[in-house]
Length: 141
Image 1 (cartoon, rainbow, N blue to C red):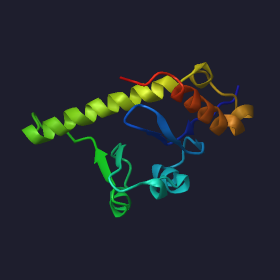
Image 2 (cartoon, rainbow, N blue to C red):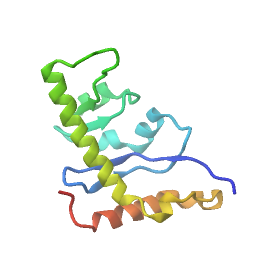
Image 3 (tube, rainbow, N blue to C red):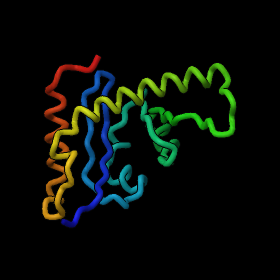
Image 4 (cartoon, rainbow, N blue to C red):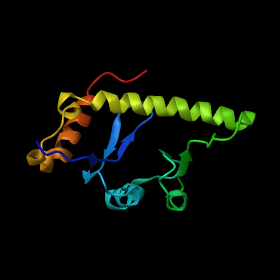
């Protein structure tokens, strides 16, 4: 069975609800292409926070919209972070765990299994339905 990797951008609110799901893209699409094509940046409001991996080079675009980009601190080669950076790293870790738990609630069996290439055109709809179902579950603590 032929299979393909797909990518999505997913937005999560503070209470764990899925607030944004981008269109499905092939697994080789660049992060920049995902961001630009999703129009996520156009939806940012003043004070919004984007938590991203280091590969997302969107700091200026996010700042122009009055939002903030938070990227995990680089700890390689450092024995210990300064106190302020260590506290920021702990907060980011807590947020990441919250986001991962929220996304985990979306992973129904259909997303755990390989989606045949013949069904790839439905991937965006499948993820949107899984997000809607996850949003109907009780709120995360």
